[in-house]
Amino acid sequence: MPLDDTDAEILRLLIEDASRSYREIGEEVDLTAPSVSDRVERLRELGVLERFTVAVDQSMFANSAARLVDVQVGPGEATGVAADLTPSTASSTSSGPRAGGSSHRHIWPKTNSGPS
View 1 (cartoon, rainbow, N blue to C red):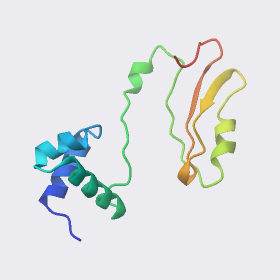
View 2 (tube, rainbow, N blue to C red):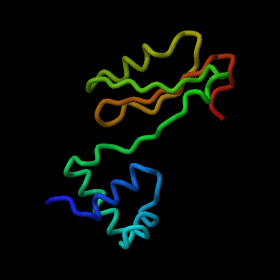
View 3 (cartoon, rainbow, N blue to C red):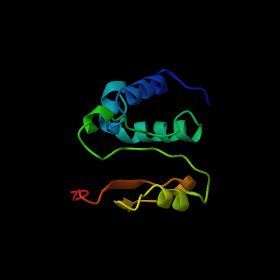
């Protein structure tokens, strides 16, 4: 099924701000939130939308030891790579491995209190 003007507008709105609710998008494209949800799911199934992500201004961490790092690994490798990324002088928490072999690990110096 080809993309229509409404799909294109939904994509434009998501590119502009991926945290928009389906209700907000629906108000912009004259659809209900469930209709927007259906279209977004179809765009994902078609491979047009791969994922939602966040952009982080790394300069905000200038005076902090914390860093955000995205490491992409193959299936089954996430746990080992995540462990290798945690130095002995750091503490960490992990939310992975997850589907597709990804793992999120939050690392901070042991002198820091860690996440609040």
